[in-house]
Length: 95
Image 1 (cartoon, rainbow, N blue to C red):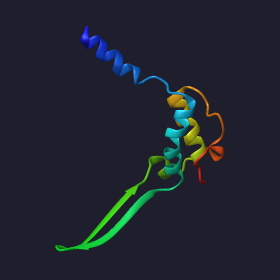
Image 2: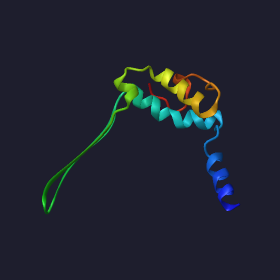
Image 3: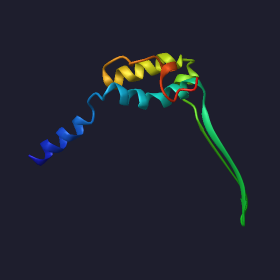
Image 4: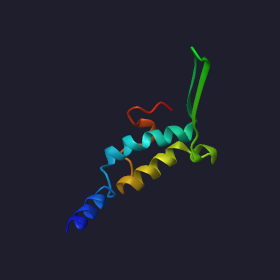
């Protein structure tokens, strides 16, 4: 019985989410389709100079996909519905 309950809880997390939540979740994917993201850090310590490079490049960017199309497909996949408004009208979008 406990195993069945655990499976039900896990499957509940796989269901569709509200459109507003899907839109918020998919903004980052659209941003990564637009351009890579990254940070560079340079510093020094007692053991000498240090550097750090962190770059995120999505397959959507490499394949040249349109960020709006990526956003629409992501929202549709997560919620089962189209976005309530286009990507360029989403709060937080800086295209």
